[in-house]
Image (tube, rainbow, N blue to C red; front, side, top):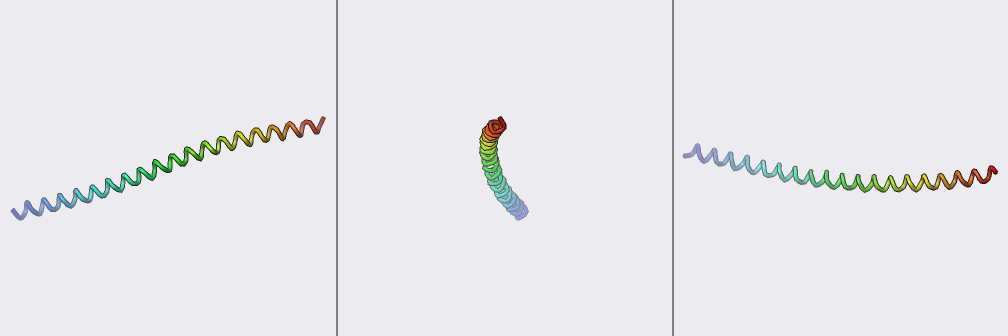
Amino acid sequence: MDHINQDNLKIASATEQQSLVVKDIDRNLDVIRQSAQNAQISSHQTREASVALYEISQQLQDAVNKLKI
């Protein structure tokens, strides 16, 4: 009977450890998800800024071309 109780304690301990690992993995996945969302937002903002800079460079080029004429 003592052997069965020891085995049950080992199983309970292993189950608790696995539960903690699963919670840790879940937290890490949340961090990864949030990081991916932030990267997506940053990428979108960078694209918008690049388009705006391109438009400004075109306007500047037009102004320079007018000065040459």
